Length: 88
Image (cartoon, rainbow, N blue to C red; front, side, top):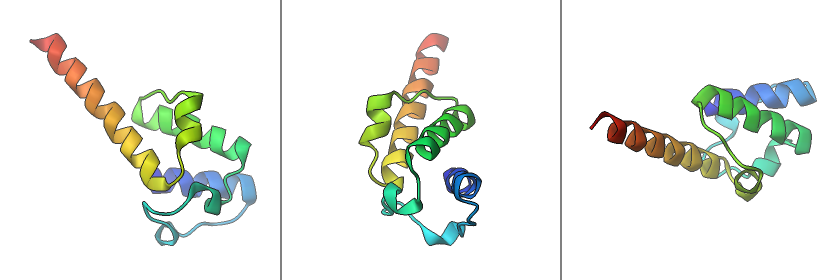
């Protein structure tokens, strides 16, 4: 899902189609043509798709695609743990 979000964001801002196999978790975000407006849009799309919030400080700390994936997984784990705690 994240690959699709990145690829669609690049396409919207740069009218360039990004092959989903062109990047992996080690790919630097800056190499994906994500300037500031595109990165802000990508973060908003991620927040909506995964139902999480990402602060500006967290977003600026992302260096690679893998950093974003790890952050999403951590946020989802926290939300799941919080949900489990409410049901107990």
